[in-house]
Amino acid sequence: MSKKKVLFPFVEAGFGHIMAEKAICDAFEKKYGDEFEIIRSDFFKEVGTPAAIKFERKMCDEVKKYTKSAAYGYLSTAVMNIFGSNISSGFIMKFFKPGVYKDSLSYLDKIKPDVVVSTHWSTNFYAEHMKDKPLTVMYGPDAHLNALFRYRCDLDMISVKWGYDRARKHFKRRFNDDNLKLVPSAIRGEAFEIERDKKKLRESLGLEDKFTAIVMEGGYGIGPTARLCEAILKADPDINLIAVCGKNEQLKNHLEKLEKGKNISFYPLAFREDVLKFIAASDLYFGKSGSGILEPAFFGVPMVVIRSVHTVERFIANYYVNIVGNAVRIKKPEKCVEFLLSAMGGGEKYNAMIKAKENLQPFGGEGIADEIYRLIKRRE
Image 1 (spheres, helix red, strand yellow):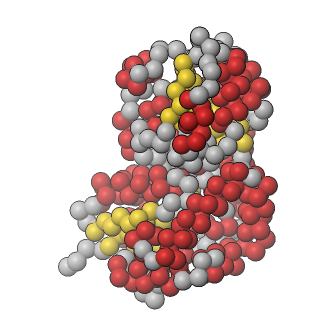
Image 2 (cartoon, rainbow, N blue to C red):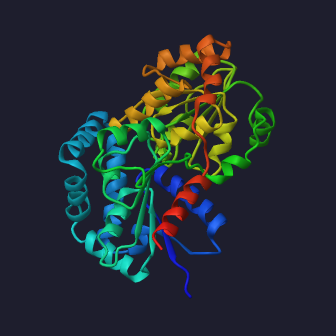
């Protein structure tokens, strides 16, 4: 008897979706891999047609547009909410790039998966429209399920109780006890293996053993990173300052040319796979409130949210600032510097943010894998 095929499609639209997919796939394969055929697919690249390649590139471009213009981001999410899940999903997936719908269905028909587990709404949409529809599972990596993550599927999951409660309250016709589950936050398995002693970790990374701040703007490195770093360099505190530039080589080159004082140790970094170690080695995190903000949260690093580029990110920021309490929201670089200096001195607010890590939801992909497994067994 052949094994059921469980497809894990990876989609680049920012890197949060990919990291969540990897965490879930790794956990499911480790626990249930002997029972199923696990298929990892770099989805649109493997579809391979010009329409599919252009579609994924367009989604990446949209993320960059949100990052460059918050007004554009808020307008886009508002429009999706106005038209709702079905119309918004149908328009984007069928008409946004002509041909990608047909090409994607053709690719899925070749694989013939029994289960499709998505952390991006696009692959769930295509799986739902297959002639021989597989079981469909979606994991929303944010603090709430936006319109595209509320599209129909056999099982929807979210890791933030506030977002879970909100979905159950406002979308009663869509969600019930069977098709929406509260699960742990999906984070890469290697996060659990990273050294938690900051002194040892800094030594292994070539950092000095002193207060460490990290600035991150997502994998594309677009945003106010340069202005914030310039303000911190001007103040010249006795710290390690790590600036993660992602794939933005122009930003890295700019930062490397900045003048720095005698006290600060400055480390502009390009995109790298071991960035989790630098986050874990840090004492304070500055960045936008994308889904990747759960990584500093996991390591208990207090967070300064310097901006939110659309409604989804605003909800994420609200969750960590107002419910967990391990973050503050500060936009102006000069005010960020003031908070940094206060944190270095053991300020009351900073210490409260450190203790707030006790309010976080659990982390790990195993609980998500278990829910997927239970769904499969219920439907046999």
